[in-house]
Amino acid sequence: MRRKISETTRRFPGTMAALSLLLVGVGVVPGAYAADDPPTPPTLPPPTLPNVLDEEPAGEAEGEPAPRTESESETETATETDPTLPEDQPAPADPEAPAAGEIAPPLEVELAPAPLPEPEPGLEAVPSDTSKEDPAASATEPTAPAPRARPIGAPEASASDLPEAKPAEKIPHKGAILEFKSGVLGCVGALCADPSGHNAGVGLALDGFLGGNIRGFLDIGVEGGWGRLNPQNIAGRSLTDVYGFDIDALSMMIGDPLVAQAAVSALTLTEASMSVVHGGPALRLHVIPRGRVSAYVGTGAHYQQWRTRYTTTSSEHVGLTFHGTSFPLVAGLGFYPTRHLALGIEGRYVPSLYWIAAIQSPFLSSPVPISALDRLGPVSDRLPSFWTMNATARVRF
Image 1 (spheres, rainbow, N blue to C red):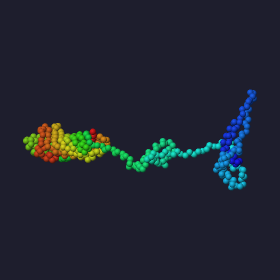
Image 2: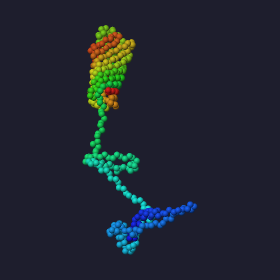
Image 3: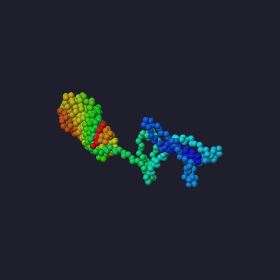
Image 4: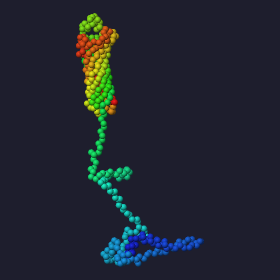
């Protein structure tokens, strides 16, 4: 029985100490104090512990043995195995148990984590890979949203399942067209480029196009242009020498040899100027109907004019203007930096066919068929054709 009391005191030291303080408080009897005497603290009676020796566990009172605790079993086992230990000696105290009168430290309870909510029937949560997360960064960064649920058995999304980005729309070439061109103008043909003729150098060319594009493939419109050439090796030469006219044939055409000789002497040149004008319908075929690159070839049927002006030693002004038809051959390449503007280059060769010439001089001013000039010398075979190389700016509406 003593062993049981010792075990009860050892297991519940805090409870016994609290019970003792409660009994002491109940036993305090307030006394009367004299008015002049200082108050004397009350004398507390010694604490009275309940006699637990007379109390028996419920099991023993009913004739049944009380259930044994693990400590009692260990103590009895130690007593049985160690014969030197007296039967009435209390079991050794637990070194970790608090001493009598001390309050036992609070129990540390380990709380199990709350179970995660079960996913809805038919759905399973897609786990996210958090093995590479930085704990320090996770403390400061906002928590990522929970993974979206997907149906059970559904395949995981791959890069091929994601919607493809819509490619940028290609720039259309159709619509109304206004085009500006500027570059250089040159000529071929003995009367224009050969030293026996005017020996003309290249000059300025200005051209333009107005029309429309159908479905990105076909340009239809009108175009025209103007250009200037620079004749050289003219001063001191006679007009008949530049064009290769025969003096005898000229005398027969005029009908008076003396007048013809005077005309040749009066047509000695000091300077000259030359210009070219053309214009008419044009047709161009695009090989790339849309996109940033524009490439085309084309042709047309134009009115063609080649005009020359001379100043003679007598300060007279003489001019010849040739009228005809040309069939330009065109090729161009451009790039659209924006949807409505294309910049590029264009090359053009303009074969020309002349059918009449107009002569302006103090002696004669009249139109003359090219066939009539051919009787004075080989003129039609030596008339010029032209070429241009331009930079272009194409505006699409």
